[in-house]
Image (cartoon, rainbow, N blue to C red; front, side, top):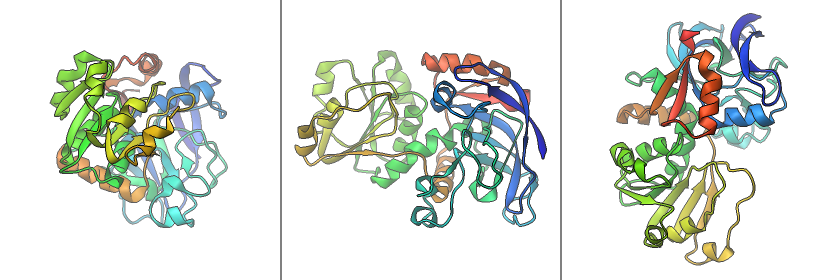
Length: 344
């Protein structure tokens, strides 16, 4: 077993504290990754508040370096710069897995933390730690030119927004709206712009307008302004809703053009209320998406490298993780916290 240092919550709503634990010795198809940077995601807060597996080591968007490879691994070498996301294994045999869409594994994928790893029976522990051990298949070469700290959030926020935009054909000639300008939304804005679409940022905060345009928005709509929202009726081919707080989606359904799609990737607490006529009129679609499989994740990293896309981050030490979580819960971040695990 490998001795690992990390930061763990020992019970629900508990603070993160230094904690030493073990990871398995490498299986033939495994790699060991030194974790250099780990993003702080709102799902980390949710897991600490509502999870079932404690002690809980959060963190599922990592970049780092290969320390060791298993005997059967041929596509990585010691010293390679890599990235790891929120899925670290799957059954490999079901239809989604064979299609490279392991995030929809019919037997449920193995998540980076808060699960039980079927290969060793141990709880999965996340990236707020010194090292991670996982199959090489779910490890990704970090393209040259991508800042490793800013690239870490791409492994969650990047793939979560890239995947639905590719699926629904975001590109030249399309008008795309992004709802919310937080950790997910600001990366979605950059990706949609790089895909060649006309991009409109919806935000509740007027003072984000200049930043939105600097990040690639062609237009900014204040979602709290009824007149501005009414003027959007029928404008959009695709809207990506990244907001994780309760809100009405009817104004965004109204903003869709005929045959348009509203895709939800934010996860507010509670149910979403929909007026059926909002969908029926104009033959509109309400859809959802989440994360991505291995093939699309590799594609996303290459796309972001080609277009110089990384997250806008605030770098913090691991001993500031509780502060980062508290500020994230207050939405006091522009736009993603990343822990520098080398500063431990």
